[in-house]
Image 1: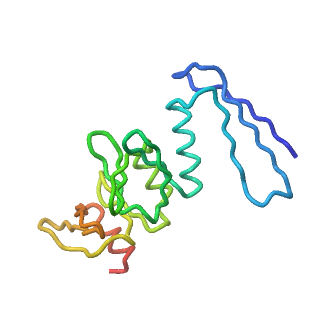
Image 2: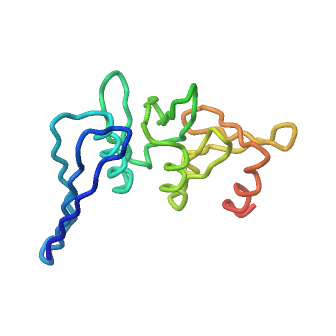
Image 3: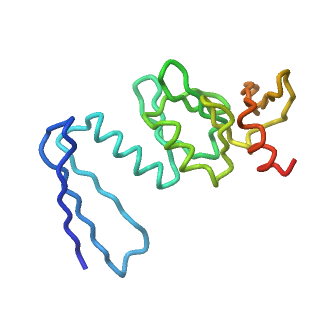
Length: 162
């Protein structure tokens, strides 16, 4: 069974059409996604990042290079100067994804939003420490400290069974 779906690109780009072809084949062992494009532009990179995110990987950029990262390698995500950063034990990368996209994808994979600006990987937390005003700090395995704001403390306690 082969499906052909044609959809116009969004108004903001105005660069023609995006052609999507979906084939359902009973004898394939894994799903394959092929993207054909005239050039690798920002919109195509975002599409690629979204596909990889749903395939349980995430794109990180550093020094004009693009890296494919596994969620288990990420300590936390942080927002700084309108950029979403993903921090591993030894590097910092930028990702084109938004925090709400990351939160939705990884909410059942050991990641938890702990502030408006941060999402932590609970498996990469060394220990938790109380702060004043009802806040906490998560000390990550890479030594970084991530503040957990009061709004997110209860979700943390519930997740950890505290």
